[in-house]
Length: 248
Image 1 (tube, helix red, strand yellow):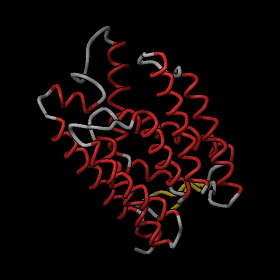
Image 2 (cartoon, rainbow, N blue to C red):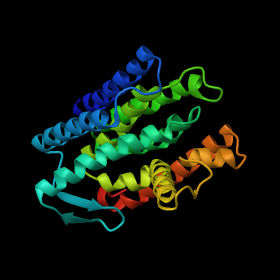
Image 3 (spheres, one colour):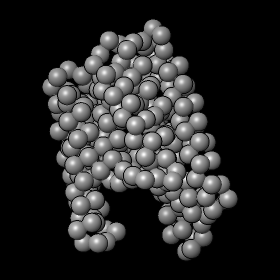
Image 4 (tube, rainbow, N blue to C red):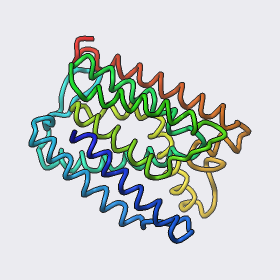
């Protein structure tokens, strides 16, 4: 329930942003500082609730090595809050082509659903429901899209993925299952930083990464298919990475 409510809170932040855009007939809704503060507040409350319910520990699990890094609680909570906000916005950045964010998130949801089945936890039920919901949504969201998720949908998905990773007490798994989100975000950061440092030069033809491939001549269907395949492969790798922990 906490995970679902957390995802809903982020979906609500996205809804406010979308509503402001529609209301004012503009591309700008909430300002960047407003979004960040709302997301940060939600992340802090969520991590505090998980800690209270005994889901979180300050021992940071390391996939593949089946070991932990012991952290101070304060440091861990700060780390958790910023990882959650970063993940949510990374999913939001990925939502740039018809069906891209939905398709990339399908194998991620399936990964967490399988983890839930292995661990006999209701977290798997939520992840499985999200997988089914995404399949239904993709019927209307695939190219050419008839329905768009907007910030309402992308922030909900980002919140759900981040919440599941922390509820399973293995946030570093986001580096694997969220590999595509990470690449999209890094491409944006690198592009902006390099542009400013070189006074106008670019590394990518356009950022984030999916637009770079568009400029290289890839069509939307090919980009979505390749990015989804990469996401699925990374989720398989993540499954292998946590096998020792769950005796898979």
